[in-house]
Image (cartoon, rainbow over all chains, first blue to last red; front, side, top):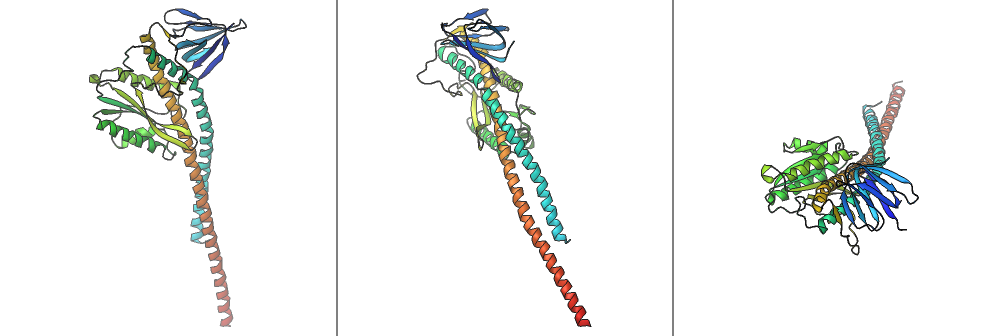
Amino acid sequence: MAELNVSVVSADREVWAGTASSVVARTTEGEIGFLPGHEPVLAILGAGQVRITLPSGEKLVANAEDGFVSVEHDTVTVVARAASLV
Amino acid sequence: MGAQLRVYRQKIRSAQTTKKITRAMELIAASRIQKAQQRVAATAPYTRAVTRAVSAVATFSNVDHVLTTEPEKVERAAVLILASDRGLAGAFNANVLKEADQLAELLREQGKDVVFYLVGRRAQGYFAFRRRAFEQVWTGDTDSPSFETAKEIADTVVDRFRQPASEGGVDEIHVVFNRFVNMISQVPEVVRLLPLEVVEGVEAPEQSELLPLYEFEPDAESVLDALLPVYIESRIFNTLLQSAASKHAATQRAMKSASDNADKLIRDYTRLANNARQAEITQQISEIVGGADALVSAK
């Protein structure tokens, strides 16, 4: 099955990068989930967490405030001024 | 000891202590360049992501946004000058200030008012000494700039940009800073931040690679609204970090040549001191010989 390449970057460093099977983020409009093959999206992040499900089934949670998420060609980039893994 | 010899010895000692200081500063600067360069590199993913996103929105949507449209008439331009808090960095500050002066000259020729925003005590001092007006100055954070400073500067200039020109707003924002090319070369450079010229990104996307057609959430305009300040912030942060790295490199070079000069001074004065000592000894011998001769002939 296809996988997503995910990277979480904050202003001063790359917080996390790796592959995942799905990503759920909270935008200003509500929660949005990405699976492989999703259409390209640019969305503004609302306050809240980004949940990343790894191919192994493990779940990663990152705090990302004040940023945006972009999706294209199975690459998800979560960009935030301040981002950290929980 | 003769007076001359003592003067030379004093000069040698003074050059030696100065050399110790400059050598230490050179080493400190060298270790800080490493760190500053790492910080520049660490912000690259963020800058790249933001630049890419901004170019995507700007190219693939027809929104007219204040931050991207060229104003018909530019009345006032803001110039942000990134200097350093401390000197002892060779021509680092002089270069950037000279570049800024030339830019201001050019803008004035085009009939624009120029307002200055400064970073670094050196720039502040330069302006204060010449009794020239500036809008705002940020100091104390040039050696290892924090993102908060960049955000503060970005907020200030973007706010000013959003004001209409009739209320004192600016229509253009330029940044003058020293670009870090490599350890021995730092070039003063002018970048126009606003209105946006997204084209010159950190890395231009490859020709073959087309930017995908994005879906915007909630809509293109609000995405652009949210993105552009972030983009400006990241650009300013990047220039601040580059300026810091350049400053450390310039300091290292200046201190290296100061240490070398001290070495040369020490060598020259040591020779002079040896000369003086030898002359003194020769004089003493000839005095003794002369005295002995006088005693012999007096018998």
